[in-house]
Length: 234
Length: 308
Image 1 (cartoon, rainbow over the protein chains, first blue to last red):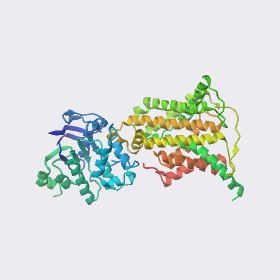
Image 2 (tube, helix red, strand yellow):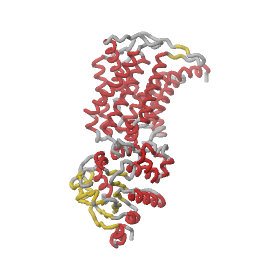
Image 3 (cartoon, rainbow over the protein chains, first blue to last red):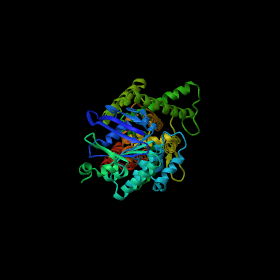
């Protein structure tokens, strides 16, 4: 069953249209990757789903509810959380305060949720009183993902979670994403590490020039000759 | 170096702490609004002056209610003055929110330079309104002069009113610190100052954070304006505008957007200005702040505690 569906999205910045009618669907419990060359509109699609950009045309449906055009803080309340590619932590706040900000709109006790996040990222627990800005790149990414998980979202949007990480850390972050997914969170992520992203994903979409090019299971796309030649470097 | 020059320094340190306390209060507010709204608010000085004059109104109001003005212990003013400071802080915060609603809010998405120029307009507007109502002549909170007393052992002189200024400023700073560290709104303010967009996608109501920032930043400015009035013995419509340079220097020195940097920066500027008078003419005092500001911009543009 589809938990999130974006239909015929046309969107962009001001006069400049970047997405020309893109669709994407995420079913419950799935990891869906979006790959494609730079400028394909991958990040723009995530921003449009979250309401940071208003689509010129098209619908965004979450759990059978039309959320097109709502403001980000409303959409977050409905259960979509988002980790931007860069500037995704509050550097002058401590690790724990970063997580608290993730839970800002929660009125209930979120102590247990925080414990769960420390279970996924034990490194963060050790550094919970330290400033997030002092952490390494990998740990920052953990803080960023941890913050987004505080609301127990139905679906998590990740914009290039492995960007600018060392290969070993890329593996680690992907393992964590799988672990988070197994705990019941659907994931829609944009990735530049295409091979790993296709390996990890149940299904994937290839975007180019603001349009859908391919979509299939991750496995099938890895075997697809044309995709391999065009987007996986042969 | 002559001994008598050095022997003046302890006394100048006291003066430095007094003026540093006032600059700090002004600088914290400016830094907070700079951090969250992302523009240099040139009206901040005139907000201080507004606070000082709203203090005058509050004092008159309390007087008309028949509250006795008898001085409090060795101070030259009574409890109504303290109450008047608090009232003026609240009123000033309210005025700032009003200005935000009618002006800055409409311009939230425009370039920062546009906002800066708008704030220059607000600065002129406020100063002229104050001058229109009260005239250009100095106004007084209370009459009479107070003699400085010698502090035993260290041999420096200080007036009870000045001890009040330092103590009251320190109290406000301590309250602000607790607010920023312990309360949810305070943490959200720090978060929004770090990264406005991420605050929004975390579900934080950033418009509300902006209102809190205006209220707190300008309330502190009002406090600074009144304390400056107590220290100078009088207030004029240009009192804040004249303090804007050292305040900007303090904010830049501490690192734009960092309230803690503003505290340190305010103290350093206050102390440097006063201590400089042992070596160079008092006329150069404002120049000292300017030189420090330029030096920081050249050597460490992010300031001591800046993240931006």
